[in-house]
Length: 203
Ligand SMILES: [Ca+2]
Ligand SMILES: [Ca+2]
Image (cartoon, rainbow, N blue to C red; front, side, top):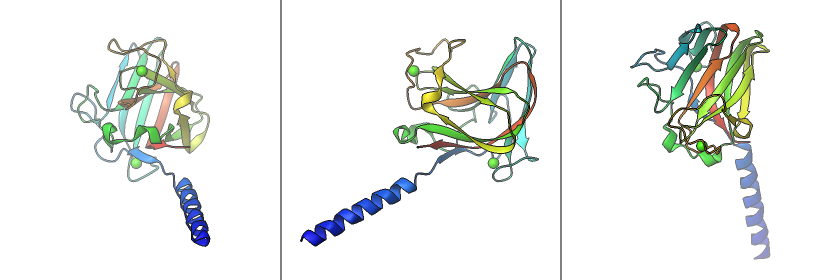
């Protein structure tokens, strides 16, 4: 009986260890399929001031499949831009691969993405919109060349104090489920950047 107990304990220990090693990311975006803007678009993007952006399917630099998200930007002084995917956006077909309400958010501690850098020095803001429309920000610096996985733990995001949507509940708590993410190359900068394979990760 005692031996059986030990065997059971060993089995539980081994299987829990095994699970610990199998933590895998949940892929939420890989940019296969149409990449379009406008009211029926699959990407919600636009600019203000003198900034300009072109968004297309990147076929010249790809991390997975046949496409990445290609962003050609001119971030002018005083201008701004956004390139967003997710739920509740103005463009109608921007949904991720998984519905946000089907995600068990408490299993994840951050977001990971692949970026194709050109060592331009550009700072790219990466924002998350929480369940109550509060916008949380983290920064990525384009200080490398080629594909690299960038890891952004949720705890390193801060609630934006430069701007929030009118309908945001500014409670300084990251409320789940997250509704959308967006990229914003910050002024003053000009260049091309590609993103691919956006995953939720647990660490
Ligand atoms: Ca891809
Ligand atoms: Ca909040």
